[in-house]
Image (tube, rainbow, N blue to C red; front, side, top):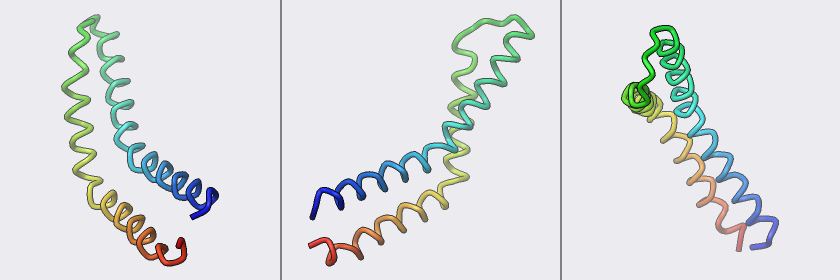
Length: 88
């Protein structure tokens, strides 16, 4: 395996991780922003108030997106295993 091939595998792996993590992080940002606005309007400044809704929203997003995430990971693993003979 050459350095270019290793760099390409690493780049693809990092891109996949970012793609899979982005929807869940986006959900956390949206829920955090909504709760921050609610706290500003109601003047409730408790730091722990946003923690539980964020966790719940992220868990629900993870469960909803699990089939898509697994499909992407299986595609990536299949591609790597199919390319093993050409990498040697």
